[in-house]
Image (cartoon, rainbow, N blue to C red; front, side, top):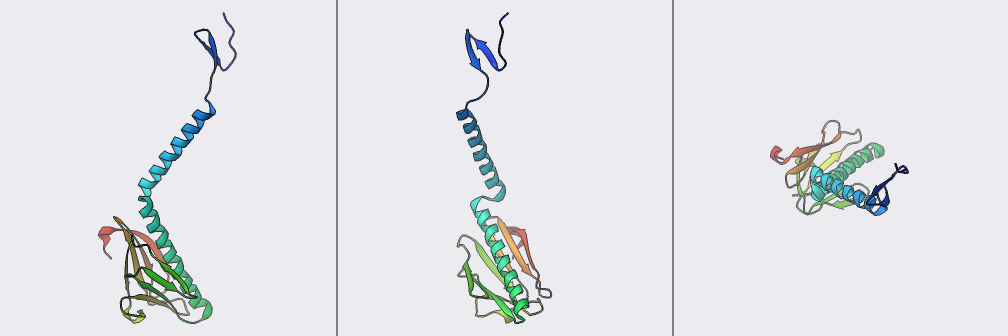
Length: 165
C-alpha cells in the first residue's frame, strides 16, 4: 500500500496536487460577473430602463426640492417642464434635460403654465400645490410622478405603457 498525502492523488505514476489554479478561479469569477450583469440588464430593462428610472427619480427629487423651497421661504415656487424640448426648471436656477430617447408627457393645471406648451406645478407656502403628473416612457416601461394638489406630496410609481397618460 502506498501512502498518499492529503490533497494529492496519483495518475500514471505522477503525483498531482488537488485544487484549482488562480487563472481558473479568475475565469470562473469573470464568467459569474458577466452572467450577473446580463441577468440584471434583462430584469431591469437594460440601459434604457436604468436611464428611465434614474430620470424619474431625478425629477421627483427636484419636485420635492421645489416644495421644500416653498415651505422654507414662505413664498410660492414653480417647477416648469417642457415636454417638447425635454427640459425642466426648478427654483434657484436648477435646470436639467431629459434624454431624447425617453418620452415625456405632462398633465396639470392650466393656470400654472408659464407659457403655452410648458407644464408647471406651483407649490404654496403651506406645502400644497396645483398638482400634476409627469410621465416618462421608454419602450414598454414607464414611470409616473404624481404631485397631489392638496398636500403637494410627490409620489413616484412604475406604470406600464398600456396604462395611458
